[in-house]
Amino acid sequence: MAETNLNKLVEEFSQGAHGNTDYYKDTVFILGATNECFAPLGFILKSSDELTLTSLQKEGYVLESLELIDVTEFKPWFEGQFSRKLTRKAQREISILHHPDNKMIFDTIETINRCYETLRSTRIMLNSEKLPTQVGEWYCKCIFGLKQKKSSSQRGFDFYFGDKRVEVKVHWGDVSSPKGVKLRKSLVELSDYTVVIYVGMNLMIREICFLDSDYVIRKFSGKGHTLFLKDSEMASYFFNRSDKHYNKVINKSALLRFCNPTFAMKIADKLNA
Image (cartoon, rainbow, N blue to C red):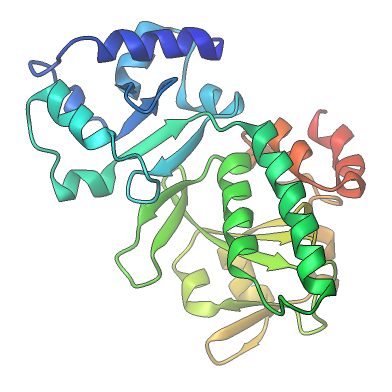
């Protein structure tokens, strides 16, 4: 279904109150054309036999935890629609499904990269890992349809692929450290999958490795609470060589759009096979 038709359904739902329904129990709400229009995913699915959460993600929709994104309009919309308070407990469980402007994001990343190059060449910026980490995590949400949920620990948010917990590690740089990508062993042990996404200095994806966490614990050595995943040991599992986890890719177009040309050429044929 085209985005415009979906937005019409969202607008239709927002036009009237629904206090006598159970839609307030939904944990996924779709953001429409404006920040004032939402609809429960359950309503959208009942309105069309063709739509599923996966099909929407394939079209570019991304799940974001309500606590992670700034959509202040949702709470008054919710309370007005359902004539009930939006509790703190409910907020922690709710995710917003929205369709980001990928062209604008791509253009912005190119602009940021140019600014980074200027700041690096003038020795103003020596370390700026936080933004690349957030960009890499967003790539994973887009490509694999990961859902973020508020963590019970101090780390902030956890990632989930369906009901499977995922440890996401973003490596920023055009080359990997000889020591390998460093992971906290305890976090890998708590997860079902481990995704290492390699983001180049230009903020584009240069490689991805999707692994079962049990395998990571068995295969890779470490010291104390740390694991080191070396390229030489992981090479056969990189996306450019192995298609074992291509079935985990929800949004193929996002993957091809945000990876660098070299990586795109290596995976395009296998990804679309």
